[in-house]
Length: 407
Image (cartoon, rainbow, N blue to C red; front, side, top):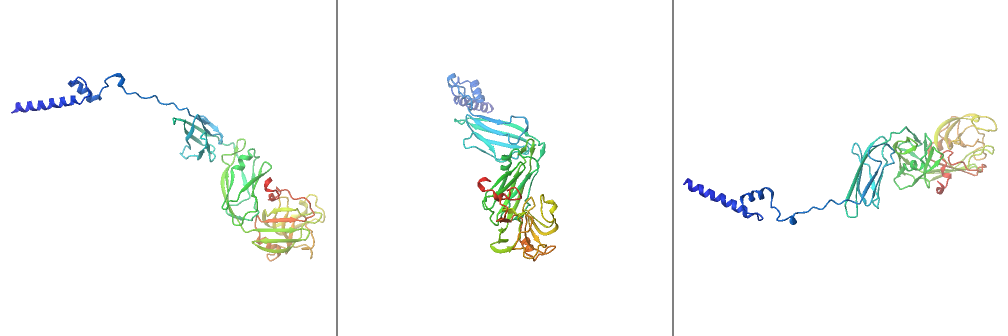
């Protein structure tokens, strides 16, 4: 029995081997051929049947990145990514923390532009790809570090966070250094408004930039000023800082002073009233033109000795309810020392506009009530003064005297 089982087993093994050989693609049919087929697959019958692989296609596109890899002390605005022979498909710029710099590929696919400025003193990685007309892709990488500023320029303005201002408010920015790149600086200060009000800047010299809309603000407008100067070269080697400043426009108040009639028409929150005033004398006339309340200063010491070329009796007075209208010293204030009949009947001041008041200031006086109801940014218009010329637009917040087309 054992011998029979051995014969049967041997026959089964032999049958398996034959079947294996029969499944091959056509060798000699020997056992050695079967082992080779199992280990390496079927062999080609001739050289002409061997599979071929096409050479990788070289893209005609080329990606160009500036600055080159390893660059240091790079200006934040120096990054350029472009393509020739094809179009950019992806561009990624990130700092060492992985934070990406947002940007857009141009419609023609030939360039990429960041939508925010790069930060100074920061290392960046750049990777970009472009494809040619056949879809073949080229790619390039770079890394660089932006410069560390030699100094910072302060940009101080006249706006407080979350404050409320009158409809004539002009945002005035003063720089601590002469600004060389004025266009770049102006573009880096932007205004968001909740009603679409457009705001534009105007330079006065090399250090002052004022912003206003085409017309007075609409009451209730919510405004945020965005300063993005950290990556802007204000002057060679000098950069600014970033911050946001929100404020609100309050009710409308416009005071129109008729110097010849010694009267003021006040339109506040839709209510109109007439008040008797006195303004600048013939020797010291008040400026004509549109002014804006710059600050509410309360009681101010005013001295004739501070006025160049002042004629008439000298004075040294504590003046209540004082609100500054110009840098040169024009105020709207209370007057307690003038004789009876001056208000509404004569102009006796040294260039200021005044309402009747009591010594030390009275909240119930015409001046006290006007002071209490006024805010920085309110408009004061003077007309019919014997002073023929209009005040300069940079004397205080007087930019409303420039037409929008020239602003």
